[in-house]
Length: 158
Ligand SMILES: [Zn+2]
Image (spheres, rainbow, N blue to C red):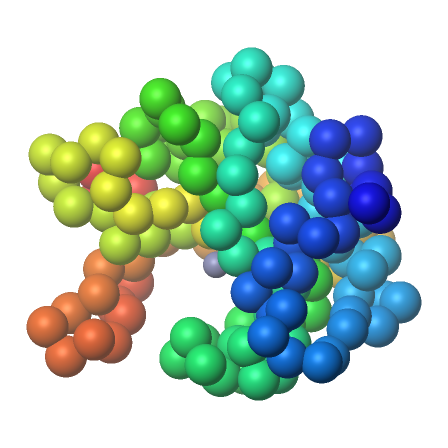
């Protein structure tokens, strides 16, 4: 099993693309590795919990199949959607915002009063890796409307 970092594997980051015969390019694998080392490993260590990756790298077809934007950072290997059993979704998002240098964190599809609802999307981009950005630029809460379309509000609303 190919590792991307000490505790994260290539397989768990490409699960959503496995139905499609498209593999990440070297630059995308490098982006995934940077995301694991700089974002996911610190999250795992802090919460003493093997964070689960619901979605990592997505091939073009896999990304289209989940209705995501072609510009999604999941396409570039720069984003993961994470779950941590026993830690509320909002608590994860708040800790990420306060403690990590990354360029996007989203509290996604979280329902008020349901602590484990939704997921946390974290993205670590080439700009951060080059030192062009030193911290979180965008922290948002994403809700999915009755029409199935996402909308974003600045900050974390739990
Ligand atoms: Zn995501």
